[in-house]
Length: 273
Image (cartoon, rainbow, N blue to C red; front, top):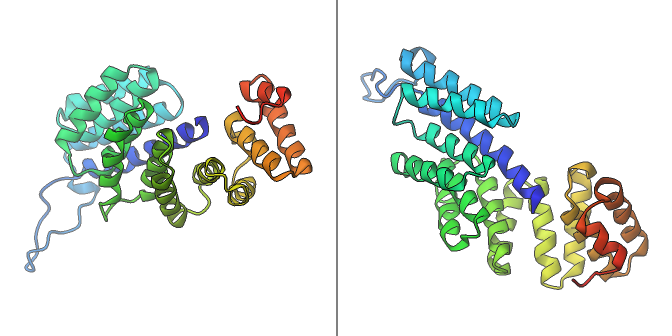
């Protein structure tokens, strides 16, 4: 759903920020008598590493603003300073993905993964790309790899992405398992609540679907919800026979997405399409 895609994009940017900063650290700090390396700080960076970090931060900023060609230029400059920077290739993959250049996006995701095969961030990002391409069976193992890395700082993102991906092939058992894991990690993530509502709606458990719709009403702003999610909320209330709640969600759909296919379906009364 579109809501998830938007949320995922912002999550991926956050992952790239963390990855870019981590990737710029020097590889050879001093060791004490214990044999344990001293903690790496900014002063350990070489001039080239600092240049890469600056360029990556700029690229991320431009990416967040939707200025993809400018972000692409910054990544190119980062790669000129460090041709083997996995995070830069991963960032370039994200940029190409948003630009609709999917072949180039995949080339860069694959190259990033070859350079840093253990990176959970890159696994999650590439998995999200593959899921967008409806290559679910290729995507799910990448999400599992990210979730299996105990050092991963954003496991809720991978779990939610995996659940959404499983929904695409109507694997409701896997979707439920992943999404409940995401919910446990980050209870107020709107995309997770929306996706769980969809899982239970598709399974015919309208009471549980409504539980997550009600939670969604608390954790998300109405203007951030897509027509698809609002239409789901309407259909849940329709199944439960709650005409007042149905009318309330319909008002939000009309207010924010009056020109959408979902609103047209509501006007036709096409609740079972």
